[in-house]
Length: 134
Image (cartoon, rainbow, N blue to C red; front, top):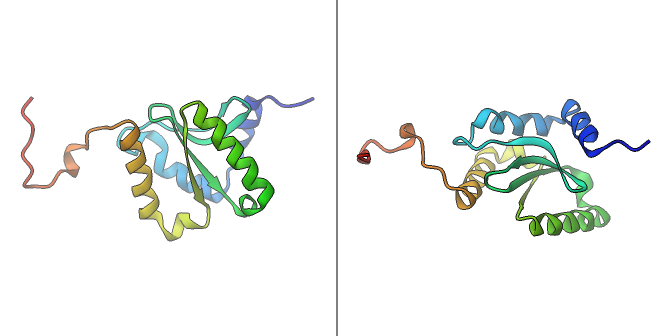
């Protein structure tokens, strides 16, 4: 008997890779300026690695298997279908997570702000910047 996408997603949540554990530490509990992410979220016939509904952004972690031509073709078809659903896919190679941590965080934050802007928290503003009266 075939498992449902929900059952597969639950199994994936239990059996995380080191890269998924690291990225989830960055994203969980609204740590990215209040953006809420869900991991292993079913959508259509696919399961999205890290999905932010508000920004319609999916972050996909890719291991070495994603470099082979057959998998690249499958990924392209999947990304094209997700685009028809209004979802932007940001692909990150597992091997880059530790080497380029800040660059990846900056890219994720920039894309989130482009798609669903949030005001920056007060503590991130420079000392010389005036507070807004409200």
